[in-house]
Length: 110
Image 1: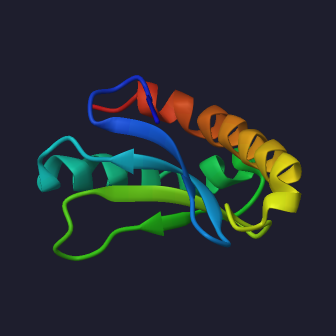
Image 2: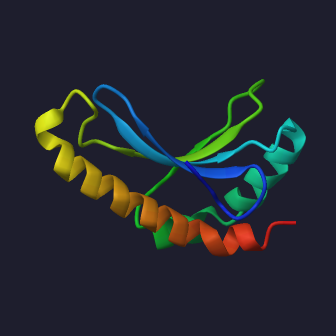
């Protein structure tokens, strides 16, 4: 994981047995602030997804403090060892696109 240029926002890779994803985690420690940030970004959803090049999963679960903007890849996970080179390539590409799509909007957060 790495910071996204604002306190409480982190880009990260997630790898499970047969699933991978890239995501922006929003967790400042305060659920209200997290929700406000999430809603500011979600207001720009169409533009963000257009720049990203695919629909994103906007994850907000009632009662959970953190919010996430995620892209799930269908290529596999850590149990799919033969596909690792292709999985890595696609995850890196997805993260570059996610950061490119979100960066200008994160810079404008209040």
